[in-house]
Image 1 (cartoon, rainbow, N blue to C red):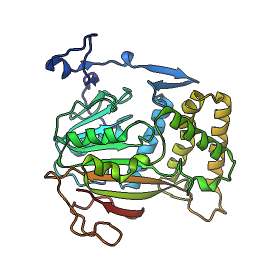
Image 2: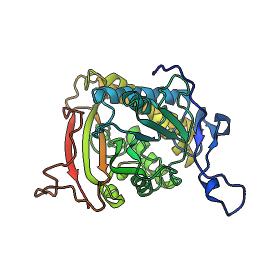
Image 3: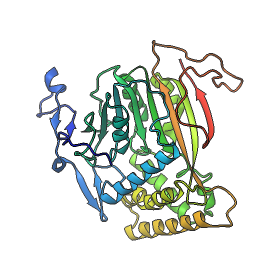
Length: 367
């Protein structure tokens, strides 16, 4: 954790204040009010604490898991925090910041940059944080109250299933990003896809039952899981160019990766209940049945991770999607397209993150 001798101001909720009237003056619409923890819509269900209607818990158990996941990312990327080139940034925005570790990291790396982390739950530290960071209570599905053309990087990580309209999210991000600035989205590819990770479990096993149920629950809630939000066309439609996709292998267990494998195994097995309990009980599944399924899948996952006879790599794939706001409207950044429609000459600077774990890396663009 970061250690800085300063108490952070109270969380800010940047949203219009309404007093029951339909008409608001400009000053009212642009106002912000302080929102304290006791004002947040916390709910306790089946022994886990949640915030609003979000499907993931926000209790201490989940915060610990988020911290471990952050350590896995640091090890995967050799302590680098982003895959996009940043040169003296002045404004970075982290959407769905969670415990705030990523935002704190970039605030430390860029002390002259203003860093804002937003979330619906105030679970971030408010003491001993860098001077240049603020955490705001905001719902990203509402209109973003951010200055236009100001942000160097909008960052979203592990947000699958959080939003019903990703096109809106990307358009809001595009509006506030400065010309030449970046958006970066990271999410897991295989938890809800019937390849690689799930292929290790036999059909009809608890893992397949659990994932089928979660997909059904997410569809019913109007917030689908999976990687549909990582479709490059969504960024193209929002106006981004230099769109790049990268896929990384996250090895589960020490056999798959001696550096972070045991941490990632912990995050995976503790994530089953965290990601499944509320969605499945919301569609009528019995709590004890869901917990039993989660425990059985966790046990089977640990056995797979430790199986000395396993020949194939036991991995979860991490997909990273980045895009840049054009410096000039309707800029076409490609120099040439190959026969597959990919850009041969990428116009952006190279990332500081190496490619040793990248399985595939391709660039798409739009005008």
